[in-house]
Image (tube, rainbow, N blue to C red; front, side):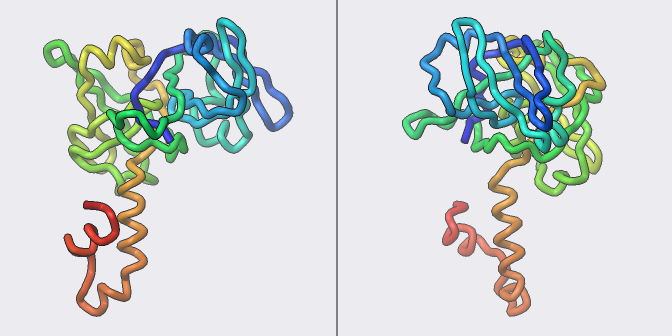
Length: 217
């Protein structure tokens, strides 16, 4: 699990194809941390397993399925990446609960400056549209963000100067693709609602009492 708070950025040094697998070599100051073989690292929001490192870089393997459903398979050497190590139980949850399992790929549609902040609008894939709500959470390339506005085909987020300075959003251009992960809590609520269909027929349905009983309040 992750929080969506980026620890560092890095750049892709090399992408090596190995049959159906691919090994990424990433240059980053994160390689100087106390890393452990086999630990999880989110790379642009994708949970990967650390397979090796040296003073200046680390490597991680990517499966063929992950290459197909995320932007990692499209990366070129020099590409900038958002990085986060896995959440520790003693850490503050400053963002939201992020699994590192990408739901869909979207594109940056536009960016507009509003004072020192910027409003970024992204396309909203149909696969996750029902999980995205105004003031709800979404993960964009590993960054925990709050949805500002949402329509049937797009959503927008407000980016403060600190986030612009410390993530890859600072240089992102319209048309570039991003990894999107919807709020996992929205998926559990949907599952509970679906499993309670028999209760709905009996007039019970989803209530504040039901949500509290099942740990959502």
